[in-house]
Length: 420
Image (cartoon, rainbow, N blue to C red; front, side):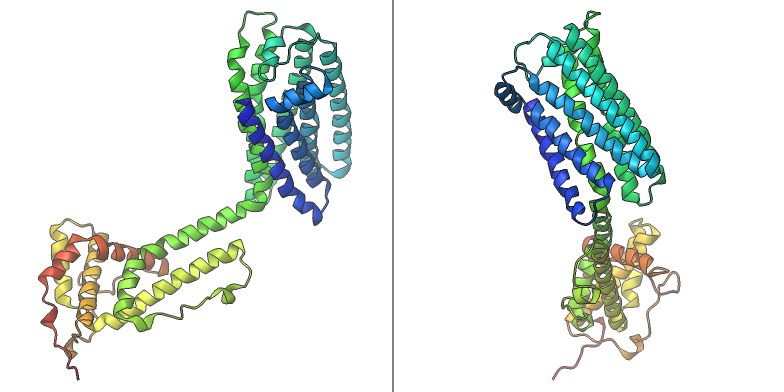
């Protein structure tokens, strides 16, 4: 698992580092510098812990398992950088500097103590996968692990507390989400700490802690993916919102297509200019403008459908509407479905009449109204009417009632157009 999960974690962290480092060209505030430095350390932790790199580093240093000291030693500056960024955002500058100074001195002492304990332990055979559970019974390694785990667990709890405080007072929605994602990633470190505590405890109790090793690796592997997401999502998260807006706008847009296509085939002159409208909305694409363009296209399609229906009003046969209502009633359609089926049948019959070159009698030129409500069918506003037209489009394509009414209706019931 280490040979796959750890390189992926390292590459993910360094990609996030490059992503955040771009902002340093515009602004070099201390929290941003701390976040970039944290990603550098995070990538280094998992890069060195990868089995192939572990072996290569040990052989270069001529000291077996030195990689674990380097890797776990980097955990302290990584956590320190994350803590520094949170503290700089959370507290006034003078208070933040005091906390950072104290934390830095304490973590430096921890790293020195870890190095002393590790180097004092007897040299063991190189083991890049199960070194900790296999050597946790050695007194010096046991003490090394206790120092490391206690410090690491406390730091994670402190970072989670400050991060959640920041999330409650954060202004932008994606900033708050990113902070909560970071907090979740820090919480995933606690199962790792629990497994390492089991490693320490096996010196005194009969416990096979090695069977939980995969839990520790999985918790850390998943947890390490959270900071790259959490620290970068305030930048690219709004694009997700824009994409969701685009999808919401285009869903009815595409669902209206069968109705729009049929109507504009019968009445092609209602179609507006189909040229590129990007110049009306700004040349450079931005997340908000993507949703604006999508809304424009939906509005244009809706208007063209309504214009085409107005042009077809003289062809809307009341007999077709009555037949469709009776057939829909026999089929047990709900009122909304029935209204859509009636409208679809009327429009389908009108479009067929236009295609056959049939013109209505002059007495049929009066506006057609809904037989049940006495009002023009549709919604109270544009959004409700678009939703209603979507149901009409679905009925036009799929409703067996519409198909049966068209099959039973004589298209030549109207007066033929005289042609020259």
